[in-house]
Image 1 (cartoon, one colour):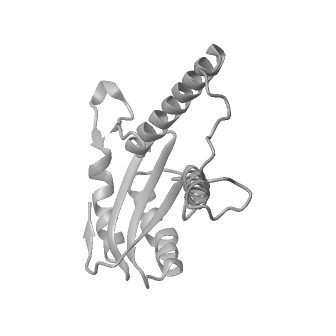
Image 2 (cartoon, one colour):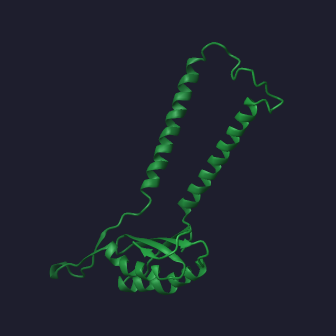
Image 3 (cartoon, helix red, strand yellow):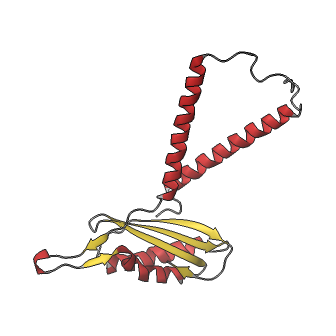
Length: 190
């Protein structure tokens, strides 16, 4: 159980580094423009060459822009597809005698009702992904600013997830928890 999974930490770290770099370069450009940097002449040209740059500079610039653009598009696509894919579970022991199908959302509905009743929880969402042989549960909890995460984690570990695991007749149910803080009050579950 983790309060913030590794890709989310990496994502936030990269965004913070990128933001600091943009803020620093923007501040440098503004300071240079208004003549606050004594080692730069605010009236000087950016590049001392007055003619066209060599052809290879144009190609390197274009290739760099394309690679950066594709990386940014991949990052944006990853933001849209953050939830693991859910499946319909087939619970039959003997397919010749019939089959039972269980939608993942149906399985998590009672669990979410229980999580929504925890003190400090405003909103909860869970995604049950994988197969019956290799399940995983991803939980996103919106909690109030003063919410006690230790108590919520304790309730999840000792009551909520073990009950869901027992209801699904699973030996183990690995799960991750992501907390989001909100100023809203009240309780909702999806």
